Image (cartoon, rainbow, N blue to C red):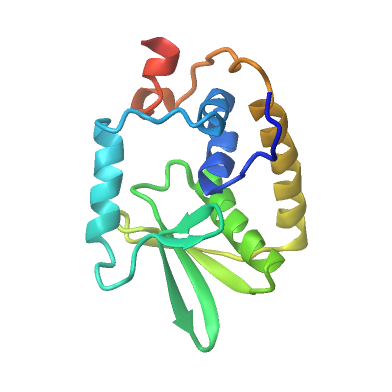
Length: 168
């Protein structure tokens, strides 16, 4: 179906841990329901948290929430509304760090959950890079399929902006 490589970005990596159907939809440029209240809340938290920082820094196919410098070190920051999906957010941030490393830029990351006043440091280890390589292969395989995987209910469905594509 695709004649060119799948452009893997942080959103695809984050979705891979949560929902294969969402990965397929994202990979086929199907947009989420933009009026979804949880997406709107996430945008509001992103805009109003860390207001002095430059938001949405583009790098390749990715958009970091913001970047800081500390002691000559680059720190990529990702803001999330809650730590409910911390594992997938950690993989998303690790993907950003991996893309930077591939470009010769070393950085570390911080996941920020402002409503919980919580921060989690993310460092790209060899093990995490290997896990990401496996995830990339899984994303490629999913996106290249002719049809999306069958919808499967999980704990994230209730707040998902793609729910109408599964249950609507």
